Length: 405
Image (tube, rainbow, N blue to C red; front, side, top):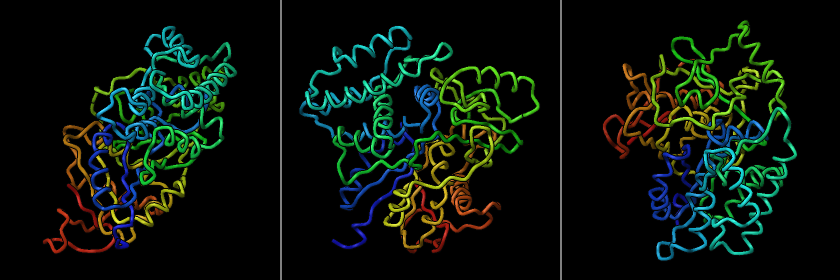
């Protein structure tokens, strides 16, 4: 086997959209006979993750859980196999009704739920131990001002949170879930940041508006421009500070809200293009964060980087702006850098009156990699190779070279 074939493939992606291409990436990996690594951001603060973050803090784990469960090997000849049962188990969501959700949760942790059918006793008791850990932590954190809302909660997210709390390590929690899901050793799911803390993002629009929090960026909401002089902002902060949860006093109110119920189908335009994205502390101040060392290691040993389908500014850019990523990607030894474009533009790559072109996607990725390296100025010159075959017209080597499909 040649050294080039042993080098890995790194896929930058979010959660649900890129799950549709997992079988494609698996086939490419098998053809190249090389390891495959998925780099997933941890800045999601919507859905059931928002309630876990509110009560426990910690990273947004939904996309990591989604990819791990999607990687469970299929067993098409046995619909009642343990692998199929585990996939159903970790993809299961509790009812939207709060009372019904809590009741079903108790049936699950007490092992009286039908979801446990076809799961071996050894795995069931291990999984129950972790779920009972998170259940104990939920009960321990109950206060008159704050109780956990099980509405629509993902069992997989609850499990991954319980494993993180039990081990004290996000990395160990991912390893445990990977093992239970029988994810092959040659495939890894790497959080962009390996952390036990919550990290949020903000986006700056061309009209000067700042939108804070990934859920607000991706889905229609009121603008969240940081106005420290706003009486309403002070009132909201004081009201939220009276609630005893995992948020520090003074945390921006928009970062403390529950976003359990929202429609992913809503695609109202942003008022202007997104110009830049950055990480913030709980008070809205910009911070620079380092990438997971495992991500940098994978990038140093890769033959190809794939920027997968998904939301540009909430699935790809949060991983690319981290310290160390841009430097690693700029390595000329990485022969292929491939962008897979979405079939349509979404809220983040509009507005509809001024939609992104393919080159706009590439420029945004190049700019993010530049910011990772501390380059604040606008990207003004990059050389791109459109198509992908060596020797094509317009092909030039060097930093910033991208292929796109």
